[in-house]
Image 1: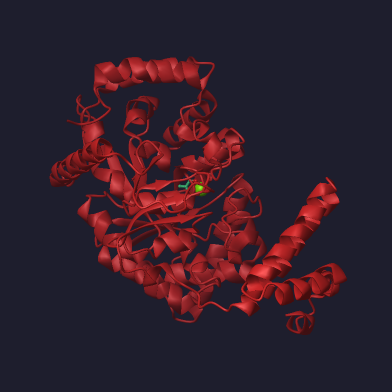
Image 2: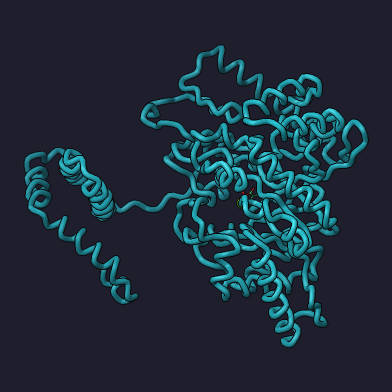
Length: 519
Ligand code: PEP
Ligand code: MG
């Protein structure tokens, strides 16, 4: 590893590995491991090695210093490598699981969840993650119950367990009675889904006749079928970064065209919104670091080659349908102006190369901005003026407004999204979109919660873009909502001081509006 890193000129990491090698030559380890292996012939070399390493870690812990705690990570890293050599294991993929299973892990990466076969994977339990993390969103879209924030120590020798994705509970070794309750809940759920499914293609109007549009969010082409089946008005968000995350490298122009063309040609007549890569420094690490601030449009503007390749692919695909592009993590109007300039240059170049017909500049394609950081909401008027449409990224808007990571289950109550701080920012974006007569969609998970719908309609949202699995339920909830009640509720919520106060208004009105669960 060190040799190959040296060849790549990666000197900093080489030094770290020097320290790792020194650790392996430390007599504390070498002597003890050898002695242990010799004195315990019935134990595997791996076990002996691990025992010595845990003593070593223990010594570091006892020092109670941040420096030594940091070193423990190195110890763990080295020992994982050594163990990997002692017992090389073939990499197991979730694709190899061919029996009905509930998977338990520290963490599931979004791309791992994306490749799960729902015929076999019936539930997920993880230590890390939050309810609006990408892994959770994908699990929801695939209707796989997923509970995060769970301490995993108890999960040994458990034969039966229930994963309740609705309440976020895991029940270990359930009694017969509990199992019966859950079997009946499962049956009811299947019946409700079937009933809602039948109405999924009907128009969606509130009790007092206001038409509302429900779009779908997807991360891969396999979800197109579900988007259509569930009656989405259009594709409101294609998370194109999934093309990078699943392969850990950026796809070529032609590879991207193959995907975009498929999306557009499978959804004839429907608007297809492709968001440019919302990806950052964490692009090739498995970890979902959604709090990284070097991502989205700012990353792409600093990595022109990647961005231009994607724009070329998008412009070349535009002829296959109704395509529009969406910019993630916009902070102010300067970025949009810059993107439009690049887009025009790319279009001119493609015209010269005869890759696209006629010069379609100066406005080669419809460009929208995501309002998902507080700055964009506050500056929504100038952003609306310069954008062709707006999309509120509620998952990130909540996380950045309330300083509440999407990956942290302890903060789930904040991520419900009805905090007055978030609502007032949403209102600014709604007013700006109305002023400049631009389309506005509320994108993200807060629009996928039935209890939030009256409040959001009352605020002024007329279009939602959500996980495809939730579309029929949200449509039905809208049909049951009375806009005049909803407006009243929104006025009270906007004047509220705390989320608790908003929750109490929502509670009151849900009794009147009967929105919680369509019978
Ligand atoms: C959002 O932030 O609300 C959003 C829709 O985008 P993502 O979940 O991919 O960040
Ligand atoms: Mg976002």
